[in-house]
Length: 191
Image (cartoon, rainbow, N blue to C red; front, top):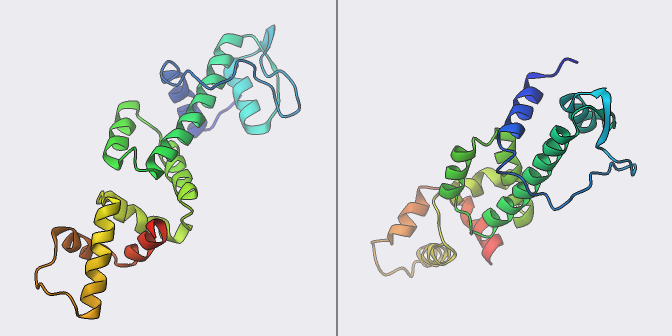
């Protein structure tokens, strides 16, 4: 069987991280149709082909390599679980971008993994797609909730003409370097 370059890269990556991503919360692998996915037959197809057919078409076949197929399914399930957990941690501020970057580098995470984490983070935060880019820019500056409130207060005081000082806080000056629409997004998030 001929596989795409993307599938081969993902397949090799799954095997390379199978000891790291080894918990998915299940011991049985059942298809949506209620069929056991891991079916052993000495004359069956390879685990790679079984995984490919199930992953792309939902087709279950017997395999001559049940242990490798189990490893692939468990790794993929664990990867999906980690994407969900990382997204929750990113959304709740428990996994700053800098720390996530270290994880990306250490585990050599594929681009699709990182995008999945960030997309799920935005869903958790209920941010619309057009706001993602702006919010990411804001988040990369690692503003805390209290810093955001301070920037909003200073901006409101300046706008009303009641700001007494001609020197803005360091946080406000940093915010000025970012698209000011981010403040509106922030108000939606924290307000």
